[in-house]
Each structure stands twice: as structure tokens, then as C-alpha cells.
Length: 102
Image (cartoon, rainbow, N blue to C red):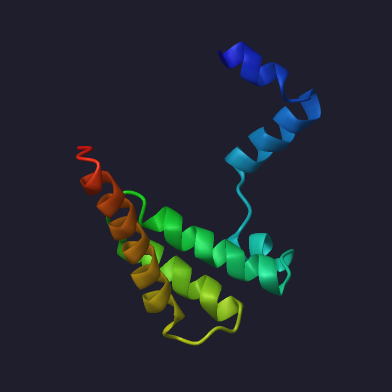
């Protein structure tokens, strides 16, 4: 399987990925290239990813707040976003419960 995955990447892409893994860009460098809409969508997706394991630790919370600040969003946006994420998880669990899926 690994050889197939490697075949899907050009040598240049593999070098670029290795460089990013060894020296990842800063959060600011990642955000600098985003427009307003893509930045907001990145924040939304980051909120979803931080909650994927069922908990949001302090470092994750601070990173979300840093992204929101960079995007000039109001202070309460992170709490509202995380409420939205949890409501979505509850909604998905309700569907599993309706079907008796454990």
C-alpha cells in the first residue's frame, strides 16, 4: 500500500512534504496566504478537528483563539463554533441511536 501512495506523489511533492514535516510553517505563515472566506472556513474546520477526539485541550483552544484573533473575529466566536460542533456531534449520534447502531 505504501508504494502505491508514494507513486501518487512526484519526487518534488515528496521533497516538499518532507521539508514541511521537518520544518513545519508557523501558524501565521499558514494564515497569511488565506483570504477572508478561506480563513473563516479554515477556522471552522480547525474547530471540527480539535473536537474529533471528544476533548479540546488548552493548546487547541488557544490556537483556535489565535486564528480568530488573526481573522479579526469577535472573542465569543470560538465558544459559539464549539457549541455548533458539539450540536453536530449530538445530531450524528441521534441518527445512530435511531438505528440502534452502537
